[in-house]
Every structure is written in C-alpha cells, then in structure tokens.
Image 1 (cartoon, helix red, strand yellow):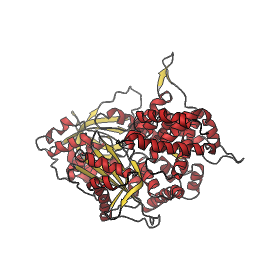
Image 2: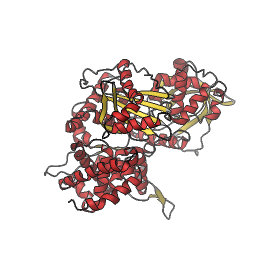
Image 3: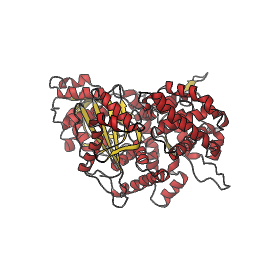
Image 4: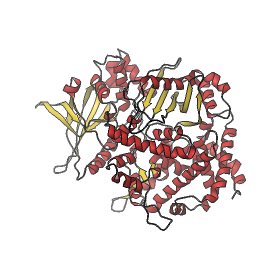
Length: 613
C-alpha cells in the first residue's frame, strides 16, 4: 500500500484539478472521467454520454462506452464521484459498492431492447441501446470499467456474468491505481525479488555472449531461456502492475482474440504443453540480478533474484497466464519463452540514468513486439520530436500582455503522468507552489491531446474523433520531418527539419484554439456528441477562416480573439445538426469517424458559413 502522505498529496492535486474544471460547467463526473481516461490505455477514446444515462428506478447508470466491431468487444464506463472525498480522510470504497456500480452498467445491456424504444431520441444513450440490441448476439466480450475517486483497499476482483456473453471483465480504477501508474514513470521499480524465498523456485537461462568491441562499455547483458508459467503467474499475483508498468502498458486482461487463444490453450490439457511453441513469450529487463553459473563447462545460469524486474513485452501473455492460475488451471508443465536483459546504465544523475534506460527499454519494447499491440504514442515518446517539444515547453515563457514579466509556461507531457511526477518530486509547500506557479495544471498538455488538436485544426476532425492513438499516429506522419533523419554528403546522419520555437508556438496556438472552442461549446449545453462537435467546429472554422487566424498572434495573445465567438456558436450548432441528420440510421459517433462525413459537411455548409463574420 502506498504511503498515506503520498496518497494524500496526490489526491489533493487531483481533486483540485477536477473541481476547477467542474466550476465552469457545474458538472463533476465529466472532468473526472476525462482525467481518469488520460491514464487508461485504450485503442479508441470512449464516447462520453452527455448527459450520462441514469435510471434510478431500474438502477441503471452509464457514463461512457466504446464498441470494437472487428473484435466484438463492448466497453462500458461508470463513474463514481464522492463529493465527501478529501486528502485528510482518504475515503475508501468496498467490494459490495463497486459490484453494484458494475451492475448498473450491466443492467444497461440486459435492458437494452427496452431502452432502445424508451430513451429519448435526442440522447446519445439511445444510440448505444440500439447498438447493443442489434449486436447482442455478436458481442463476445464486455469490459466494465468502474472509475472512482475513492480508494479500493481490498483490491479483490469483481466478477459478473451476462447471459449470452462469453467473457465479462470488471476493472476498478481507483486513485491508488492512477498513482501507481504515475509513480511507474519515475523509472524501473527498485523492488528485489528473491525467487527461491519469495516464490519457492528459481529458473535457468543461457547467457548470450556480448558483441561489443574490446574497450567499449557494455550497456547490457542478455539471457534467454524458459520461465515456468506457474512462477510467472505467482510473481504477477504478488507484485502485479509493478512488473509491467515500465514504458509500455496495457490493461493486462484477457482481451481480444490473441489472449482468448492463450487461455484456450492453457485450459486444454492436450495443448497446454505446446504453449511454448504457440506463444512468443516475454521480454524483460532488470537493473541487476543475483545470477550464478550452474556448471563451469555448461552455458547455463540460475536466476536466483532480480532487482527492478520489468516485463516490457508480453504483458498480455502474463495476464492471461495469471488468469488461468487464478482459475486453478494446472500450469505444472507449462513454460514461457523468455528473454532477460540486465541494464548497465551509468550516469551522473539519477534522472539521466532513467532517461537512458527509457531509451533502451523503448527500443527493446518496439523491436521485441510481434504478437501483442503496442501503442504508437508510447513507442514514439522518446523520439527527437517529442523530446524537443518537451525541452521547449520547459524553457519557453508564456508572453505577458499586462506589462509584467512572464511567470508561467506550458507543460508538455511526453509521458503520461509526467506533470504529477515532476510536482511530487518537489517538497510540499514552497517548492510545489513555485512549480505550480511556473506550470499551472490547466496548461499541462499530453501528447495524444496535442495530436487531436493539431489534426482538427488541419482539417481532419474525423481522425480526431477516432481517439488519441489514431490521432497521434497521423500527427506523427504529418510531422515526420521533425523526427526522421537523412544522411548528408559525408554520410553523417542529419535531421530532416529542426523543431524550432515557432513550430512549438504554433502547436500550442492550435491547442489554445481548441480550448477556446471547447469552452464555448460547453457553455451552449448541447445535448450529445460534444467531442465530435468540437473537432468539426474547429476544422470548419479553420477551413473557412484559417487565413484570417494568425497562429503566432494566438500564441502571443494566449487567446483566440472573441470576435470569433459568435461564428463558433453558429458552426457548432450546424455541426451538431449535421452529424445527427446526415447519420440517418447509422451510429452518429461511428459516422463522425469517417472521412466521408467531413467531406459531406464541408460540401453542404462551407458556402453557408462563409459570410457569418
């Protein structure tokens, strides 16, 4: 359990940020949900229901959802925000309460056919009810995410079943879980595992001779071999996310076709011995190890203990094995192919050591990955482009327009939770207050959000509507000159383009424009599809009037002129009407993700909206 002081300090900052955003709209669950989602790995951003669907008589509540048609996976989100939570009492939530919250989402599914006819047609929730009722026989997996601002100290699994659905997973995301993810960004965990003492057995691996030239520093040593599946399952059961939170993360659940196949193999007595043939195994790193040679004449080493052990590829495999272990599947004769890299990174400062380790781990993660999906935003977090934007954000003061000297900067998060990590590294009181003065929390921007804002400004609202990961992928393609390299006449590697101060300022300017439009749209209290309306409004504003909006001027003013406010309101109303009307019988949010939707919106409304200012 994390120390209460640490939890208290993080909770205070977390609640203050949510409450600051809620003060503008009077709604707490939406900013709370959005804040939590920043830390949750997902392929697509879920559609947030505004207003949320609540039926107290039938005990149904739902705040967001997403549906993967290719995998037949439905994700439901229910947000629990306790207004009495505070940094002094650290209120907790029990398993019974969490189970009921999960059941509120489950009841939306079991009542979907009725809800499809009774929910008002203007509400997003009706679309979801129709989607579920039309696809209920095709849905293979349901994931219910319970998000709470309290602490789930028991940390026991919540189990539910839904008639006709093969797999139902319930995940609890409490404040502790978010804090654990943030702390993981500070580098490899320093826990030491004594395999014999802690888990009852060790394992053997072969040493891979180094290929470095004589006199060169050896930055790593590598071993390959097999780990007993039972040992791996017990390690995850005891240390959980501490083993898998380095650099690239996942939900660590049996999700999707690959992981269902793993479970099926493990449950079949005839196939489980073939596991090592069917599965690509895991790649792991550690800072140091207690490793001894078993026999001087044989290249075989006993791995007795590891410090800072992290599984950087194969988290889903690990989770599936753990799920089988918890289901009492016999793992006696099951082995997992494994690679272990011991990092030997020396640096003058611990922070430098972490950065060097991050670069190595990122490369290992990228090249080792073949079976399980790794998010592009994580793999490219250490690219030159991202690193240069981070440096510029730390060194570039925001212009002052009142004659005083500049006091604050934007804070670009190259890694999730980086702002909180930087804040918590400072002593509470004067040091933290000084940090927040220089880097206000409302000016912290994560890389996937930066990508969505860029893509909407540049005329790709359908890409932004697909979520952060897809937007980041396209964003990096659009800006590849800032992170790819070429060779000069002397065969020296040179960057295609430099990441200049102007590049940074224009990216922040696009963020400011998106923030401005978001504030106006939220003040309009439009019913439904808020994110899609914002992206389409920004895109149409830039499409028609982009030549009249100087991004450097927006940066210098740190604002978009209020002369655009009425035009934004008109465009937003047209965007909402268009999305609903043009979708017809289609799901509006799915329709908004298609390029054809954006093309049609431009064709039908460009002329009409060209003379409103």
